[in-house]
Length: 247
Ligand code: PEP
Image (cartoon, rainbow, N blue to C red; front, side, top):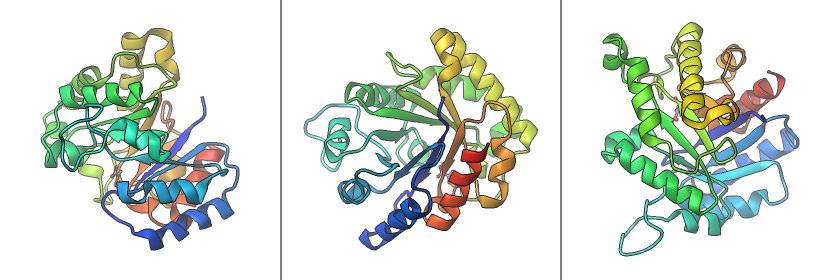
């Protein structure tokens, strides 16, 4: 299994920010892990052009569940594929909150992604209130089983465990808390997919930065990271890629 460092630019970045891609490729031309950036949809085609023939992969941040049709403002999985994306982030907590996305919808979107031959990165994770109430594992389990697409396997599905309270806050769970959730998710993936569940990459996301990446990557069943803020700067994301490559 090749580990994965994935960056999520969210609704940030313009064509000027593509210079960060060049800097990342120059400093990390052949990392031991996979390296993926998901810029806003407007930049995907340019980013794909910018990174052609390099180790830097480009993905989308969302797709519609339908293949095409009257859905103004939306983007289908096939359109992402056509633009050159190979991955798509789905069910990010910001989309679950801002767009009321449910597990059922995330699953449908993930099935659309698989049909378009994209790798689906399905996000899940608890709020602080759910953690305080002792509901973390039950919540993560129901999000996992509710969102896994039919036809999922270790080649086309990645799970990102992202505690909502750790996203963009500078706070992270303890290494023991991360390890507990990742071990739980691994066991649930094996229940859902059989032996192949051992090969599904489980990323940790939430305030990963150069200073904490190595210790997080040393936790069992952490197969990479989904990185928001620190993915916007090539120096920071490059340091995270280097830490994952060394793990
Ligand atoms: C994210 O948006 O998925 C994320 C993990 O953000 P940050 O790294 O900024 O906490």
